[in-house]
Length: 163
Picture (cartoon, rainbow, N blue to C red):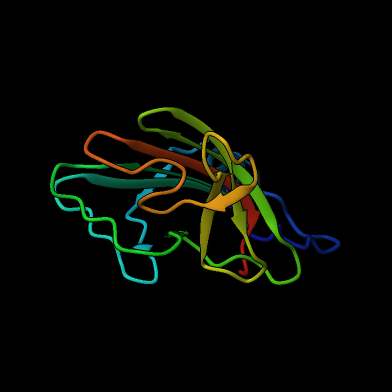
């Protein structure tokens, strides 16, 4: 993970260890492998993943974080009620709202957006409310399709972290 660059002082001797720390290690973190995490999945009445799967991964460079989440519904997944919130690996910085992309593969395939408020530690996905209503609605167990076994939600957002 990248860190704040060093402030050099006049007359300081540059050596291999300093160059490795300040240059090599900084670049290595930019090209590093992604880190996995388990996102939370909540609503007014919480869903439960059951024998489905919820996975997340992220790459953080400085305070910039790209997070990707995949939720695969299982035969014992329960869907709760209300709009879904999906947890992030780090809280977002205050003062800026963020948008990302989302896709639901259910009875139909739906393209949507990730909506994340400033300072939040979770996001939600919006899709057209139904096949006949193109207004945005928050993803739930019945919007935009009734979720069932093998349906998949994918989402990605890039944001500035609080720290």
